[in-house]
Length: 140
Image (tube, rainbow, N blue to C red; front, side, top):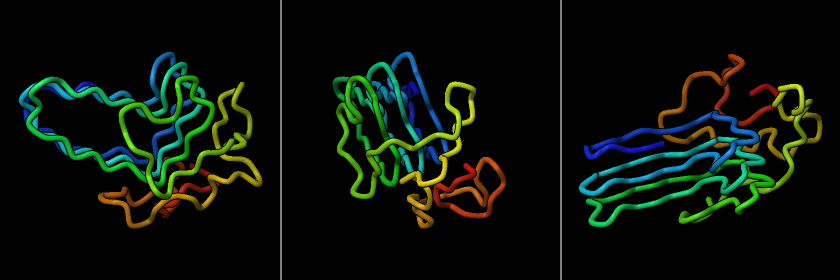
């Protein structure tokens, strides 16, 4: 994610990134930018570098990054690069149903099931499968 030289406010929720050829989520803040970004209830696994990476340009105006209740696992460069872990992050194998064939739903016994945060800011009404819950579930 490249944040341009402007005021930018956004949130990421219910994103699953598995097997990225770089960081699962890479945040680059440019000079003179005022930025607020929320990262909640995401599942970031098996990237070749970091789960969440942050690079702040020289002279940046301000950055408010809130990341919590994310699931991270097996990111080659570490789960966090330049950011602090969230107090409620889950660092464990999500036990995907069938990752090699693209089924990235957390399987039976996954520590990711019900590990999300229903009170995270600006959550959508449903998850990617249409379930009316803000928490990471069997059906993301």
